[in-house]
Length: 337
Image (cartoon, rainbow, N blue to C red; front, side, top):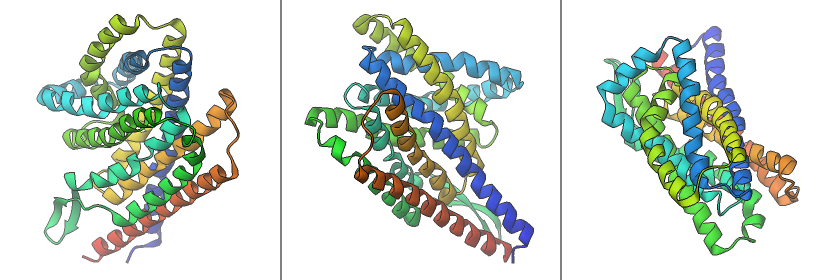
């Protein structure tokens, strides 16, 4: 049996990563709004993507050096440089370049809505990883299983997102749909895959700031190559795009990414809770929609869209509840062993 103090502690430990995930979603929403703004003003998606990481690197470097954590990070990168470059390219390169590319063909709200496929993508990736369970012989790593209950809650969230976007998507051409949809689907698998692989590689030795900086540095070769291509095909970025890219780097690249990585670090090894944290990113579509209404003067959502918003919120609550219930059952079973 769990004591009252233990129950309270479990509840707090469950809610904290969820709250961090929601705050991360708020700052991630700036990506979709500002990327669309840059695209509408004539800026190239290539600079929108690469400038973000060029700005992130020195900002994060100052933070990590200030925390006196640079040496452990460099040591970890030297131990497995190939793995760092590969999974940083997957987690950052194959995530953000497609997101920026899609901004040239779809509005921010549609990209933010489509991006929520990552909720299901993250659940489908579970069998590729191991999770730790407690047995009579001690902690044992076993192959992860798809959290079907959590996956059903994710489908509810996606249903709400579909309702939010369905009337808008009917006004887009097939080209806009495909070029706005396929890159985001690629990104939805790349981001959780790269993030989880790097968590396995770091094995708890690095904090969120170190891991984000390490992945940023390891992905820089890709961004350098991409920026050279952008310079010769689209020219240099404008001052306006440079400033907006800096804002994306601070809000989304540094604040949101660190918050999200901190949340996933807190629940690593527990795929149920990890899926719940990743489900909080569905809030991005709500924040992006609000931002576009306020700053880009898009139309107020219809009643159907508001129903979608309601279903998204309900889906998130149910997803969190299912995850929490599974965790409590697991804790009770472990305590009786």
